[in-house]
Amino acid sequence: MDCPLLQERGASGNGMTDLTTSDLTVLGLETSCDETAAAVVRRGADGRVEVLSSVIASQIAEHAPYGGVVPEIAARSHVEAIDGIARQAMAEAGISFEGLSGVAATAGPGLIGGVMVGLSFGKAVALARGLPLVAVNHLEGHAVSARLAADIPYPFLLLLVSGGHCQLLEVGGIGACTRLGSTIDDAAGEAFDKIAKAMGLPYPGGPALEKMAVGGKPEAFPLPRALLGREGYDFSFSGLKTAAGRIAEKLTDDAQRRDLAAAVQEAIARQLTERTGRAMTAYARKHDGRDLRFVVAGGVAANKTVRARLEATASDAGFSFDAPPLIYCTDNAAMIALAGAERLALGLTDGMDAAARPRWPLDAVAAAANPTHAFGRKGAKA
Ligand code: KG4
Ligand code: ZN
Picture 1: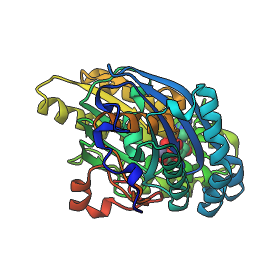
Picture 2: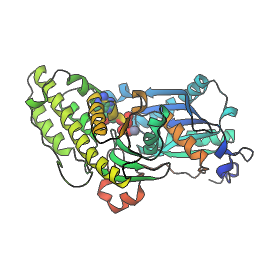
Picture 3: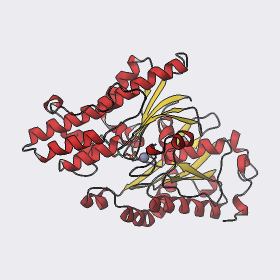
Picture 4: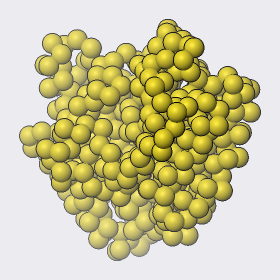
């Protein structure tokens, strides 16, 4: 669409303020899966970050009867909720649209119907209010999410581990991510969800399985250890999913269910730490032992066992450890607003023709070199 209002803004925002050196207040919108979210984040010219509001409407109850996210239901639900959620985020932040520097909306990867809802809404707000639009990659949102609550300078090593994604990235800054490894089949969160479903646990499976694992004996059920010791930094969870699914069919009591849940959680944590530990060694070598910062982000980072294991691995390898507070691990709009603000500060804005994308790898070069890594439940796992 031709939109003179939004053209030629670039680094200069509305033409009066230099956004590269200003405090920026950004409305973020997130609709790529089963959460309708809106948030207002202020990023000072000195890089200081303040979350003024973060509203998340979960659709869990609507999808629970189906044991997973139903794309059509998700898209309809986003349409119904987005207006009210965005208004609420603005009201809680206590600012008017005149106080905004820009609007940031997730433009992918994700369920395309939902992504289109949030992105179209963002375009409408930008157009109506004369604000710059930033089309944000959801994965870049997760990548910056730990920076919402802590001052973590670039570069850092990132494990992004969620329902649709499982990858190790070197994050050099906005738009400068290099993928070191990725899942070759399922994402870790997907494995949690599918195994939990096979065990008869409620959706979403990750938190339910974590609860079930309390007091369980992981050694009761030996599970396959995929890719153990193999070169590189890729992940694989489908063998574990199949093996655990078979065991799940034969469970007879809650004690066994606890043991299986503990064994699955242990197996996932073990693979994540083993592959991440390898990546840390290579990263430390590349950076001559400097800038050794590790961040874990995404929904699975909410798992306490996974967090604790990764923290220990980081400490052993001489890395600092950061994970976003739990509310910013799972999908939220504050991370989208921050990614938008960081882009805006660099003069990176998008036009009304910004496309909603079901697949959108952060590291396009690595994805093109290894396209088998680029498919999944929510599009690009890679
Ligand atoms: O980041 P997120 O909200 O959405 C995606 O971008 O995928 O992650 C959701 C995923 C789901 O697979 C969910 O089961 C998993 O994160 N998850 C957990 C926990 N909390 C959420 N997995 C294990 N333990 C948890 N406590
Ligand atoms: Zn996500």
